[in-house]
Image 1 (tube, helix red, strand yellow):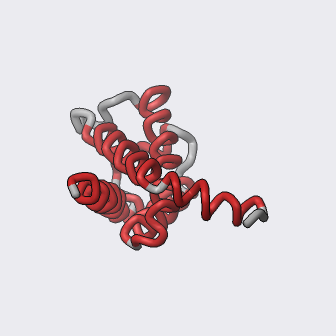
Image 2 (cartoon, helix red, strand yellow):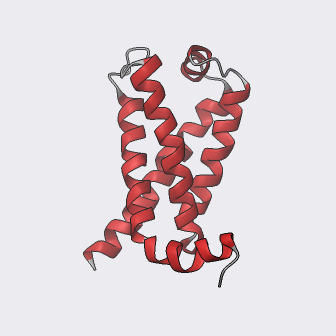
Length: 133
């Protein structure tokens, strides 16, 4: 029962955090523009990442597709965390590391969702992808 509650909380937390940042990406807030300028991906990367985070958020909220949202969220956050650690730094524009910590929370939540669905991924999803039933 506790694992089921943790699974639901992880899905909602990841979706909420990514969803909440969409406003800043899609409106071109100074922080978002600064980040994507620093990594050489402004404006196309800001829009692309925003769209992918929107898709991941929606997939996470639908029980049947949560595994896919988890995989997408993990991939996106590996990129975000990597950018923080190599180019941006932990703190961006005096945010005290808030965006970095949000990325860590989404990464860990997405990873929990993927691990929770590993049997489904291995027995149902992968066989369909590689063409074996």
